[in-house]
Image 1: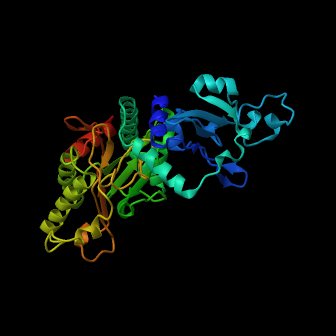
Image 2: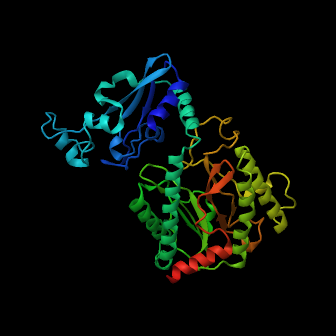
Image 3: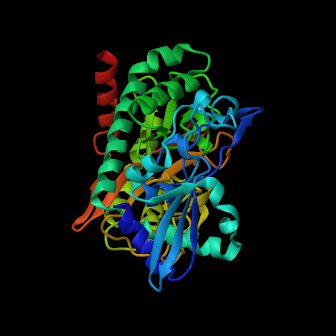
Length: 411
């Protein structure tokens, strides 16, 4: 799998040295580092996804007019007898502190790539900004279409995420009683993510009440109110680093109020229309389709005088979806003509997530609608016959969500 991926990259850059780093450890506080995750392009080309990859570098050395040899520069294990004492003294990389790493021979057997000590890389890692940009674009574009194994990994991420959402519903009584119930929700989902995979694919959004009107609310420090909604946007990342990205808007009491139910019911038509436009069209097509339904709905409510123009963007702001894969916003470095303006192809995986964010202080809105944020986000894979809903195990309608929550809370 990874040799074929490297061959595709090689064909894009004949005769050029290509350098793909795993990334470096980042300090969180003083002498404590953030948990390490390899760069997605590095993981895609090597199959290496572990925390022990910090500082490692994949180099594709030209070996002919149309070929490259892969060389993996890494920091091999530090045995106890090593003269410099790294085993005991190096708090970042010493085996005594962070665990065993493979030696060069073990790494070669594991990867099928020629391995060399990181110290031998020297100045070979020198690059320039223009080349970096071109390489990053190529790597994103090569990852746009997923193979069958990648789709399986993404479905696994979706399935674990579904279980995490069920965990959250079961935990609502305790979360409602806690002064920072949003944090309780975040922790419950995080437990599932760490138990089943590598962790969360991005910071969990557990936004109750008006917090749901903040698109990337990750403070998660609020109390839960049983009369309000919870917008939960979360995804499990597998051990192979593929992530789901799912959102549901849940009534904390288990039952929607008339106004919150109206907003949640409204989210289905734009999502359905957008989903129908996925196969065979441009990425922008399904966004335009969803936005048209949003504008029409806001006009029916009397919020807008008519659905024409861009005034609906005041209440929705962001795009209706994005590619999904090793990154939650996958392939973001791809050129516009291959992604944003490109035609959707079989094997691409994406989210569909039109949302409505009615700010609590927005006086253009009826009082009963202010402070409501609603998003229902699903993950889909483009197929030869259309699009397959990967996250269909989670309900999306008002009645379906209420029935699902009631069953979980009673159990």
